[in-house]
Image 1 (tube, rainbow, N blue to C red):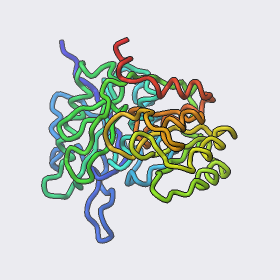
Image 2 (cartoon, rainbow, N blue to C red; image 1 turned 120 degrees about the vertical axis):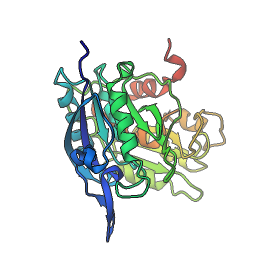
Image 3 (spheres, helix red, strand yellow; image 1 turned 30 degrees about the horizontal axis):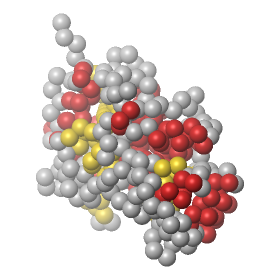
Image 4 (tube, rainbow, N blue to C red; image 1 turned 135 degrees about the vertical axis):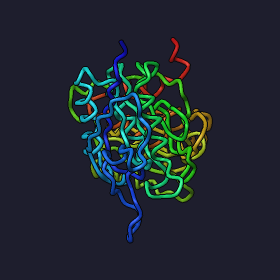
Length: 321
C-alpha cells in the first residue's frame, strides 16, 4: 500500500506571496492561501501539504537572524518522522543565500526545496503557482532524497550550492555555476552559524582601499571581495588586504562577473596571484552572496585559515572522488 507523501510548506513572504498596493508590491498572502485551490493555488493532488508561516517579508529585508529562524523551522519540520520533505517559499532577492545556509547545516536525506516567484500573486501570468507545484512535487519525489537543499524555479531544479540569481525579470531567475559541487556540511552544534559579521566589498575603478581597513576596524570578522575579472583588485588594494589578514580578518576573493571559475592568473601587484600570496582565499565557484554565507558560518564555528581555504578549494572535480 502506497503512503501519501507529507510535505511541510514554510512561508517567508517574498514576491510569490505579494500583491500590488498603492505603495508598491508587498507580501500580503499567507502561505496557507497560496495553497488553496479556490484561490487558484497549485495542483498538489496525491500529496498531504502542511503549510506554516515562518516569516512574512520581502527577502531584501531578510536579516541573519531571520535566516537562522528559517533554518531552525526547517529542522523542526524534519524532527517529525512522518514528513517526507520541506518546501520553502522565499523572495528571490536573497533566496540563494538562505538556501546556501540551509544546505550548509542540512544533515538529513529528506529534501528541502526552495521556490518563489518573479511576478506577484495578483499579476497576469503569475509564476508562483507553477513554481510551488513543482517544488512540492520535487520534495515528494523519492529521487530527490540525499541531494541536499534544492531550488525549484522556472521549470528547473538546481542544487542550492552554487546557485545565483541571474535575472531580475526572466521567469528562469536562477542558474547554477557548478552543479556538481560537493556538499560539505558545517557542524554548528545547534548554534547560529551567521553570528559572525562578514561584509562584501565590490571593487571598481577608483576604489578606495581604506574601505577595507575601516570595515575590519569596525567589527567585520571576515571580508569577501567581489573582484574584477578572475578575482583581481588593482594596485593599492593588495597591501590593505594583506594588513587586514595579518590582523586576523580573513579575506575570501570572488568576482562580480556572473559566470566562470575564479582562477589566480594575474599578478602585477593587484591580481589574484598577489592576493593569494598575501593570504587571501579564492572562492572559485561561489559568488559573493554565497561566499559571504559560507565564510560567516565557518568563522562562527571557529574555523581557521587552513579550514577556510580547504572549504573553498573543494571544486566539482572532487564530487565523485
